[in-house]
Image (tube, rainbow, N blue to C red):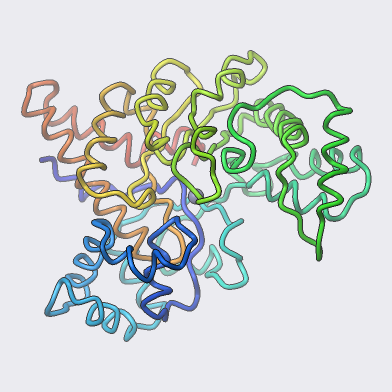
Length: 378
Ligand SMILES: [Zn+2]
């Protein structure tokens, strides 16, 4: 087993955390499932391997007597004010940079990026979520050309506006098979979206319009050499998992015009891990994210996806993340477990004489830190 505790992580995909960290048991549990039905927090989360493990980690760092007494652990957690909790856990995690998607949850109820950077002694970088941008503009405009003009404008000079990446959740909406539609088809879809606007909000789900606008963004990304992250595989409960298979991205990956656009496949494409890692192994512009909090899977499953990814893709194509959201322990736990799982997998390779220790350490550095520095030009 390689000891990787000395490598600070670049968390290439995560979200804001709540300013109010005092949560009752059900609300706390609900953070550890992608299911939205409340029955999961009531009956099932406490029986998941991930949650049981998380409580044990918290019990240890908070000095609880029992590692399995949920009440004791959550009471001890509740005694710390939010700032102390964040500071304590982030310092313990040794985070170099957090790359944030601020679109979810609502920034109004979350720590600002600056506050987190200060508490965690880490750098914060931001990425722009395309579907949220589309929604924000659609509620304000009545004309499709106007939409495209505003959208183009928002996507110009991205680095100057502090972004290091774009992000798309199209997998959750209409799927990764992003088609080519005529402008007329996109306009018709836009009219449908406009009709769905209610109280200043719309959830975009009109495929011809989303795909059309994604192509506009891809051109910008290629021109500005701006990487784009795609959610793939496991994700929000509204996703149709069949459409989240990263192989659907083939037409985008094959498109010569987008060769300069780096594509990052999020969530280790779970359970399509081998397929996603394969894409990173054959397309020069594809990179692969290894996320150690979400999906909420146990250590054996994390070992499996880490082996699968390292088994086929170069470490210079792999990047660590947490996908942490709501709670600071998600970023902390991912950093600990990411290092530990990666250390075990590389340790096995060293043991089998596939590489020496120095080479193993070098590959680990790439996954935890260096690849992200290159991809996002940090
Ligand atoms: Zn996410």
